[in-house]
Amino acid sequence: MTAHPAWTTVDTYFADLLVPEDEALTHALRAGESAGLPPISVTPTQGKLLHLLARLTPARRILEIGTLAAYSTIWLARALPADGRLITLEFAPAHADVARANLSHAGLDKVTEVRTGPALDSLAALHAEGAAPFDLVFIDADKANNARYLEWALKLTRPGGLIVLDNVVRGGGVADAASDDPAIRGTREALELMASHPDLDGTAVQTVGAKGYDGFALARVRS
Image 1: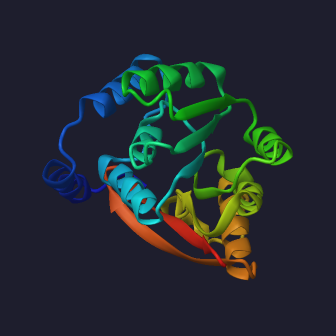
Image 2: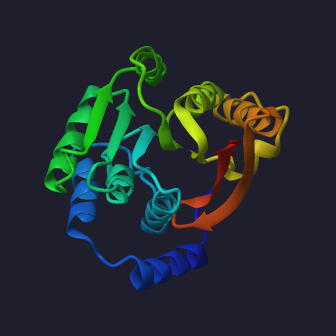
């Protein structure tokens, strides 16, 4: 759904007031645009929300599924303590190259790692490696696999940790049980898993803004 002009105006007001212009973040967006990446990064206010959630958790280890140009990655990585670590998973090698350059430009290449390839394969590899549990997982990749990503996130997140699932409203389409859209079906499956799994306690929030009508879900892994 196209953004209403008032939504964008309010988003701009909030961002100008609460999320001042930042060279590294602006550079990441421009680099992504120059490389032909789709303009689907989170908004500045959404990035700041991710940053605050990571600090409130508090997160020492963060996993991101879906990197793009690393705009959200920068927001999350900046919330880490000095000994923190963020691993982000990106399917497209060209996108991963842009992301690595942007993280280096932001001075975050020492605390971040971009892994390339199908996220389900990378998640299985992390599990096989015996990766230490993550404190926060941000899922923002292909929506058809949302439920599979959530299953892996649960396996890889510590008790008390937080899982955030982006773009769950789909312009209102998520309420359509008869939809044959893979993104809607995958999102509904993930939300149903969130609702039914005994180790997850979650909710979902609708949003409007510069990116239109959408929203996110978040779940705490029960202790």
